[in-house]
Image (cartoon, rainbow, N blue to C red):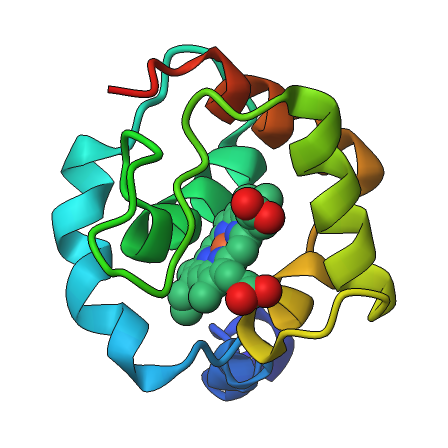
Length: 121
Ligand code: HEC
């Protein structure tokens, strides 16, 4: 039998490279998966990102914790600039910098526009 045709048993090494989010985010992820607003953004990768955002900023852009800012109804240019600043480190914040590193310019733009379009409540 040709061994090269067998399923690769070492495939699990791939998942080892996946991102390690701060622990406290995980319990929220499952909840937010169902609640994440999907309509405005159709790229799967961007939606994956936004599930993470929702863990802290709320699926509706309204944060549930006092130390996390609301994103809903903010100006899109402002949001976009903040994301860029987090990514570059100009605005220092551990979690946001980490997430920023995984965002392309396009994704930051799309996410900023999406949150800007949500009602402030
Ligand atoms: C672990 C919790 C956490 C996650 C996950 C998270 N954020 Fe944040 N975010 C914060 C906190 C806390 C701040 C406030 C940072 C500060 O004090 O400067 C913030 C700030 C921001 C700001 C600036 C808002 C303002 O009013 O200045 C934006 C924009 C933002 N986050 C977008 C996102 C996006 C987009 C995602 C998903 C890719 C995300 N965040 C994921 C916790 C989080």
